[in-house]
Length: 208
Image (cartoon, rainbow, N blue to C red; front, top):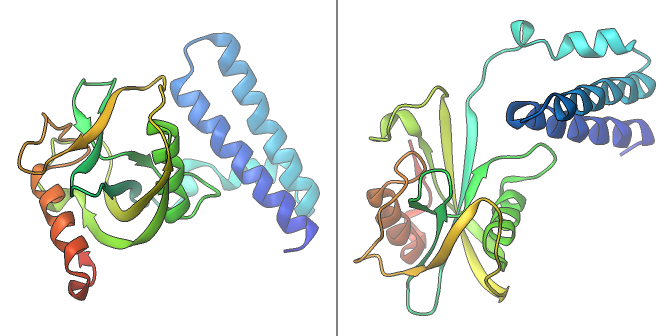
């Protein structure tokens, strides 16, 4: 990529982090800092493109954007006993596959690796896509977003369990004895389906 393209990618990442910060900001001080980062991102993009910062900012206006689904990336990790890696969400006290919303600047495989490392401390290698599901077509609790769920098979290659601020537990579980699941994030039947597709690569990819 050219230097201008590199700057634009950096600016996109800064804006994405700032917007996420604004969503979860708990204080006026933090809000002000994230708003300032958004403005800096627009200025960097303006310098790289020849546009004005105002023109850059207007291109991100939600009213002018085509609304698209959010993408939820989940890592499917088995150990040598065919047990599956789960994490307990601090938000609801229930369990899920490691993962979360996709991040600007990261491919789906990179998101899966990053989420496992951040939530558990384990190092994994992405193998292949197992399933891409439309959340609406499965019996999840209702949420205010339209979501595609991406399940990626990963191989555990290193690391060890560590503590993290938004995860209250982690471990490998038998698929015949799963703990209470965070149903907004994953369903029991989805975990069973990922095992079947992991064990039978000839099935290809499950696609809604």
